[in-house]
Every structure is written in structure tokens, then in C-alpha cells.
Image 1 (cartoon, rainbow, N blue to C red):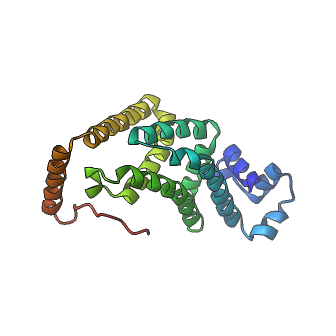
Image 2 (cartoon, one colour; image 1 turned 120 degrees about the vertical axis):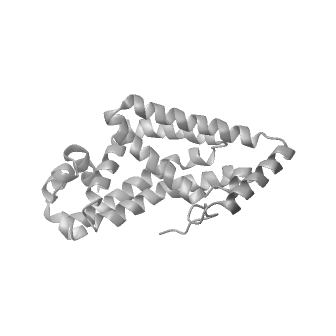
Length: 215
């Protein structure tokens, strides 16, 4: 499985084969089919295992996050480190391959959900008691955050300044959330009431759900 990840990093998803994986792993390519059946099954297992290790490495850091600003700061650090180590590039390659591979797509989505689940736990904790909890969907927000940072990896490759502008905009959003959380009790009740009115009068199809079921 480590050889599969290395092959993606070296050759891209289009250049991965049983031969290139075996060469990276230093084994006979027949072992790919003996142990995994198909190359796609090997890539799926490698994707999940590699992502699980990365998520586990950050679990304690996520658990220590105390504000949206801290979550964004951790996201910046994670983005830079994962990009430097080539892990985001591997994920981008798997996403590209999954667009046309029905067997690789579910495995890549399952690996992404490992990040989403970790981020969702943080958001649920941060939003608890906030007026924004009435409007925000932690599951949808977690998916948006995960998708955003993956997109920034691709964006950064062609427009680094634009990627930095996107991160700066997220920082501004974090400031807004901090301001809302610092409101006094009267202002918080007024804001909660206003958000409730907006929610009740939202056009059909645009109302935000309190929670979203997993696909």
C-alpha cells in the first residue's frame, strides 16, 4: 500500500499500474493481484489507510481547538504540511481518477469522510450554544471546509495569491463568528430571534436544514 501511494506521487494516477506500484514497493507485480485482486482495490485500500494515518496524527490537535479562528489556523498548518509532504497532491490525483472510475470513487469518498468526521466533531463543539447553531449545519460545513482546503491545493498551483486571498476571507469569517459569540445576552436573544425569522421566511428549497443525512 505504501508502494501504491509512492507510485501515485511519482507518476500521477494516469501512470499508476501494477508494474509501477511493484517497482516502488520492491516486490513482484503478481503480488498486487494475489493480495488485492485488482489494482483499483489496492488503490482504494492504500487511500483509506494513508488518510486514516494522517487523520489520526492530527486528532489531538483537532480536539484542542477552541475557536473557529484556531480551526482555521490548524487548517493552514495542515494544508502547508500536507502539501509539502505531497499528501494533498496524492489526494488530488485520486479525486481526478475517481471521476471516471466507479470503483475508485467510493473509496476516495470514504477516505474524505475521515477528515469530514473529524472536522464535524470540532464544529459541533464550537457551535454549541452559539446563536449560529440554529442556522448552521455542522455536517454541511465540515464537508465545505474539507472541500475548500482540497480546492485550495489545486488553486494554489496556478494562483498562489488567489489562494491566500481565499484563506484571508475565511479569517474574516472567523472574526465575524467571534463577534457574534461575544455578544451580550440581550443582543444574542435578538440575533437568535432574527435568525429564526429569516429561517421561517426563507423560500422553499433555500431553507437550511438543521442536520443533513449522510449519503
